[in-house]
Image (tube, rainbow, N blue to C red; front, side):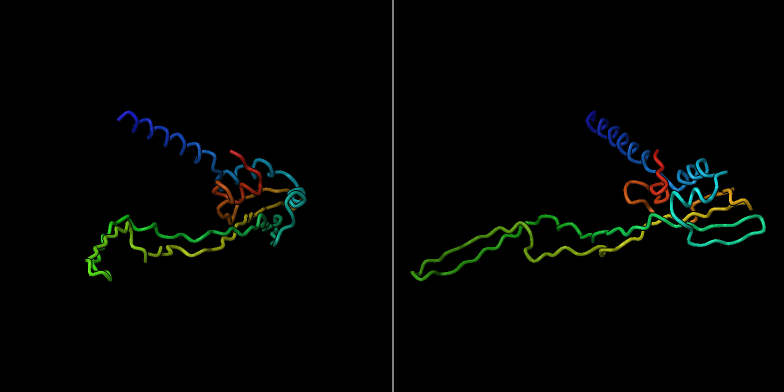
Length: 167
């Protein structure tokens, strides 16, 4: 009983470490706001590349920026082998000298079983898209992730990876 309790505590500790190190879109938004609000938008574009679109407003502009594009391959998943089952096969025959020979074979699983594909292989597009609002002087007044995919590693946010957010 004590071993099970120790294992459960250890599992909770490890899972909390894994999930606490995961960065989210909110983490990326907070980091972008603290780093870029009040900065010239050209400084952001010099660091991360040009915008893909801009929309003029009477009070400034809204820029759409996209970066961190990457394609991730996700391999197929297959069903587990069927549980081991024992099959006993007995064969009785007469050999050339007239003696009866009985042969018994034990097979631990069905030799014709094939795993079934659960999900096919796929390619997933990873990217970060930000909406950046500026005033008439092109100073950033608002910045937020408008489209964020999962990260490439343990991160839950591609924007957090692209913007270099660590937890």
